[in-house]
Length: 478
Ligand code: GDP
Image 1 (cartoon, rainbow, N blue to C red):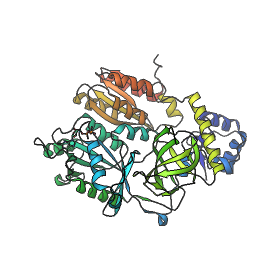
Image 2 (cartoon, rainbow, N blue to C red):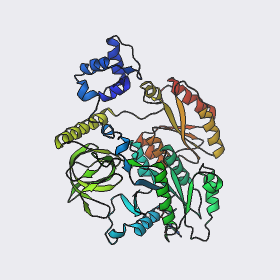
Image 3 (tube, protein in one colour):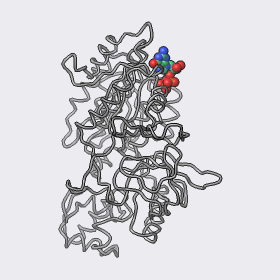
Image 4 (cartoon, protein in one colour):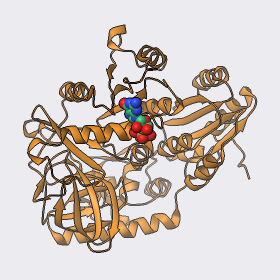
């Protein structure tokens, strides 16, 4: 095994520049992306008093390291994990309720459903998992923290209202996360329903229905009447079959926190989505920066369960503290390791908080690039009119600075809003406002999330500013 200078630095919790300096003093000229041989790794690790075999090659405190790939032969089909997105009032909540009520597993009917942040339904003998936190805020926050948990996005568009700003935002969020989209054209029961218009408008955003030669699935539904729900579920199963979502049920569980809170009686309560393996009562576990032993597990029907397989959401108790939505979890071999890793992670989190590594801004862009953290510079573009947004986007795409690519995550007309900031924060992007300003919520969010917003009136100035930042010549803005 080998590591690059950057990877080694990460494992040792040091700055890459420090490692490069050390190597230099040992007579090795290295760059951040350079692969190091075993001798150099041992030498450097030794300098920090770390034993390579145990510590460096597997960083036990990195929960991502537990998300290992499985042998193909151990993989079995797992339920798809679905998120519902769309414009406000287009029927996301109604749809989630409707699916849940019509499809609660036959034998379970009458069971008191429990709101744990996700639920499962069964259709044609197959399960589907729905995250029932509608809206893309939760979705994007989790994505921001590196946790990809959604397999399929249902984009709800009201047939009497058509494509709206948040519809477009949802499309861009799903696209950025590379998640397949199924369109549910809702409110078909309404007099004013015009599904053709919805298809037309979505085509303009790259979602072309199959009937028109594209490959996007459109399902007309009425969430309120329950019409089309069966077809929608069928399409989800179809996409699941095509994409072949699989997992290995016979291994220690790993996954992601859907939601968590402190309960007066039960202490820390967390809903976990098992993404691989099977979670069992009694398992020693690390969840984000917390740890413990799974004391009790309750499913979405409020029933106690002893095990939870891939794609299953369960609420657990037994953690020493409350983790955060989007945190990863992993089951470890024994309680002692869980405690060690959990405590080490809590410690590291404290340190990180203290030295708070800043987000990307144009002022520190070059630093981030030098450290090898960035290959793309992500940008969200908002402009007063669609035409200037497009002109600016195409000019930005033409910027050519060696080794770095401009990636436009989202463009739109109108003021910079909170959703733009959430998206930018998730992808460490810079927001450019062209003849527009952030609204109040966006301003607040940008401050909280430390997102860099740049306001301009002349395209040339935008391009120049980005180019200079990429080349590291921008004077800091005070
Ligand atoms: P959300 O903001 O996207 O979660 O939207 P809601 O589910 O809260 O729905 C907004 C409004 O639209 C509510 O008054 C719902 O009753 C109504 N609604 C939702 N689905 C339908 C539908 O299929 N037909 C009709 N006529 N109204 C619907």
